[in-house]
Structure formats: structure tokens, C-alpha cells
Length: 486
Image (cartoon, rainbow, N blue to C red; front, side, top):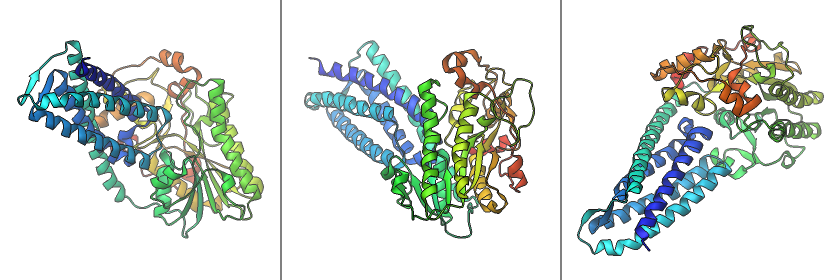
């Protein structure tokens, strides 16, 4: 049995699995280069990737003999330590999706197998003269060398992202802290481990608020916030005599993803209205009623605007009889039930939230690759808001709760909506990339069906109520927002 050849074949499989994990999980679904909390993980990934680059290229057509075999063993040892450290950091900083956990497990098993097979050969290599012996394996060697180049570029990408996030972390610490209340209050947050929720909880803690979070994985959630929050898995764990002053309901499964089958639609409804009903049922039996419920919704409430319809939509604009609008209507109605118990309800209709996480990473990826341009017609409106203004807006509404009644819809969008082609041009200018590559809409229609409306249609939404409350945007201009986030 040629164990050396089998080890190289397993290395090739490792390269394919690693490429899938990097592109699908780290770049697309998890968007690690945009996550401030992933800075340490990215640093580890960068180091491991550069080691793997050395291994792929170095083992593609050479055997490491004599003293070089000792070097190889040392490199394997460092890689194993970094892998174990990476597992710990991942569990402490984020909740891995099931597909990523499965992929990591397969990678670990496969990696252990090819390392073991290579180690089997080291006794013979140790007794040979010290040299890098040329032993090419045809196309397998070419493929492994290409894997080495690819993983090396990925490592450089992660290293640069870690450095950029470090600079952003310093910049964030220099920002003026967000003030929610003049006193320390009891706050319940759902969706606390998500993009907006995690930043919100950190801002609440920095302001001296006492935070309880609802999470399916309370241990990891508690780690995420350094044990400074109380984590529960169900509203049933919250006794009726528990004092809660303000509830911020951000929970809801990500709407952009798998095609909207009937099953998928039911899951999206359940993740919003199902959990919200648990909250309002707890409010009904609570001895001390919360006085304010800040509930996330979305500008999908307004449906879509037909091409050529450039009306500005404020909070009085009507909904439509399409799924995205109906989903928001049901979500808002579920939250509104809290008003029956005297709770003031503010429904925060969020536009596309721009931040280090969320949709921005996927929106900027084609632009970073030089493939930016019009998506479909490019004329569809995009109503956006910087995540820092979302947090400040939540605090502003909280501070002005005296002016609220029991039913308030508030648009959370920047004052200046842009067309999609204009968004691409501004982003390309910020990133120093071209923006001339048109993407037809029909493939998205074919692949995503009704969900393609999220990308190919739009709404020109204005934050009339938020401005009436006296809110001043820190990022009213898209170029300014993208420059801060790039």
C-alpha cells in the first residue's frame, strides 16, 4: 500500500472541503471578515492557512527527508494546536450553524487521517539524507500546488481582515457611548446573538443596563457577553414576579436564504410570530408589566414599488398582499397584542442595515471582485441605515417614550434612499473598484422565485416619524457610511 500517495489524495480532499467551508461559511453565510467578534478567529485562520499553504505546496511533489522530516512534524504539531484553539474560540464567540459543524468535523477526521499516514512514513524519512526529494505525482501534484496558492491567498485575506477589524475596534471605542436611560433598568432582549442584537446588548451593558437575553444556546450566549447577561432558553423560565422594564424584540430567522417554499414560509412566520406570542403571553401574566416594547419589523411591510414609482413611503403608506408584506403585518400584529396590557409598542421597520455583519458582506462581494454593476434594472430603490444609527435610534425612541402612544410604526432608514445601480457605484468608488458589470435578473427569479423581489424590487422609504422625534443621523450619506465600514 502506497500510504504516501493515499495521504496526498486525502490532502486533495482536504483542499476541496476547506474551499467549500471558506467560501460558503466564512465568506457568505457567516461573513467572518465583517464580524468584529471574529477578529481572533480570523487571526488563527490566517496563521493556519499560511501553514497549510506551505504544506500543500511543499508536499505536492517533494518528500521531506532527514532534518526536514523533523520540521514537518513540528509544523503538524503547530497546526493541531491552532486547530484546537480555533475550536475553543469559535465556541466562545459565535453559534456555528449545523452545516459548518459537520464540515469542521469531516475536516478534522480527514486531516487527522492524512497527517497519520504521512507520519507513518517519517521513520524512513528520518534515516534518509537531509533533502527535499523531488517526487512528483502528476496532476495530483499540480492540484495540491494550486490548493496551496488558494489557501495562501485566503490566509492573506483573513490576516488583512483581522487587522482591519482591529482598527475598527479602536475606532468604535472612540465613539460616543450610546445612552438609553438615566437609570439602570431591567431589559429583556430577544435575537441578542444576531448581528444587531449582539451590538445592542454590548451597548446596553456599557450604559449600565441589566440585561436578560432569550437564546436557544444560553451557555454560548453568556460566553459571548463575558457572563454579564442572564440567559434563558424560554419565556417559561421567567417568573411572573420578575421585573422587566423594557423589552426589545429582535428575534426572527433570516429571511434571505432558501427558496420560499410553504415549509420555509411557515418557519419564517414561526420564528417571528411564534416567539412574539410567547412574549406577549408572559406580559399578560407578569405582575410588573413592562412599560415599553421595542419590536423589530421591516420595510418589507410596504411591499414593492413598481418601476417608475418614485413616491416616498412614510409610516402611513399601506401594506400589500404579498408574502414579505404579510409576514411583517403578522409580526407587527403579534407584538401589538402587548398594548392590551398597557404596554407602549414601537414597531421599528428596518431597512437594509449596513454593518460589519448582516447583508453588507454579500452585497459588497461582487464589487470587491470587480463585478459590481446594475442588478436587474438597477433602478430599484434601496432604503438603508447604518447599524450605529439603528442602535442610536432605539435609544432615541426609548428616551422619547413619553411622546409615544400604544401603537407606533417608526421607519428606521437613512433619509437618502438610493437606487441599486447608484449603491453599486458609490460602493465601487469607496472600494476603488470598477462598476460596469450588469447582472440580469432572470437567473435570480429562476433560482429564488418570489424571494427575488428582495433584490430586484425596492421601496423608497423615509424616516418621517424618527425625524419628527428629533433624531439626528450620524450617517445620513451612503458614501460616508460605506467609508466607515469598508
